[in-house]
Image 1 (cartoon, one colour):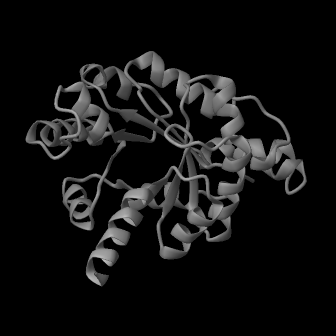
Image 2 (tube, rainbow, N blue to C red):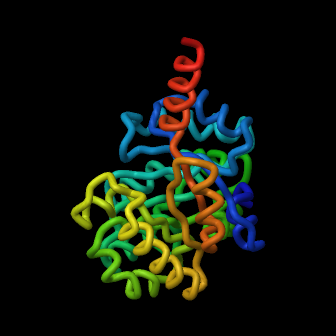
Length: 253
């Protein structure tokens, strides 16, 4: 059977999970985040320079420290998604999902038949057909895959109901930075207009029986969004490391 997805299990149990994006091409950073206690790491192949081989090694870093590896890809194309998930990533995070069709494409590429159209082979995700047979892997792979769609434009907010109707989506993630740009206030992610739009849309997500998620910069923001019922919370390693480094050097001087 496919490797157990601990984040999916926790979400099914009604718990919240906290993770981090990693857009640095470093398996060591991913492993470090796991040892630090993060539930998941989103290997960022959208805003990061890493190619497929580096993504595969970053997945290994996650497995070494027993955190759940997810991957954000840049292009909503089946072959692109296939190659990233074949590395062993246990979730697809698809940015810029603006329409029902966008969501359907992502789900179809992430899941094997009959739920989707992902191509099946003896790849690393299934132990190369050696850890387990290809049929045994395929039997449970869909159950262990997380499908996360990102809502980050005014257009997507307008199409939210139709996006939520797509079977196979587990999590709807609201990207505050791009949403602020789409709303004409780029970078103002804490503006009331952005926060209220995400909070209101999150209620619709939860009412549809799905998990709502968003990005935060501080522990206080993480607690704030969990208080609103959001259970998939992500920060960004580069931001965390940069702020910690600046605080250290300012204190040292």
